[in-house]
Length: 73
Image (tube, rainbow, N blue to C red; front, side, top):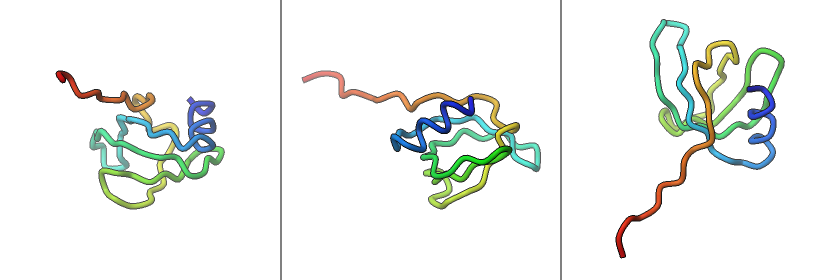
C-alpha cells in the first residue's frame, strides 16, 4: 500500500480510497497524494476540496481511479 502511495505521489495519478475516519465514519474519497510519511500522508481530497492528512493504518481500500469512458458514439 505504501508503495502505491509513493508511486502516485511522483506520477500525480488519482486514487480512489475507502477510509475510516477518527470518528469511526467510513468515507469514499478521490485523492491525489502530495507527500508520504512513515504513518501518514498528505493528499488533496477532491471530496473535501482541500489538502488533508490521512493515517495509513486507517485506509480500508485504495486503488488507482478507474477511467470512465464515454459509451456510445
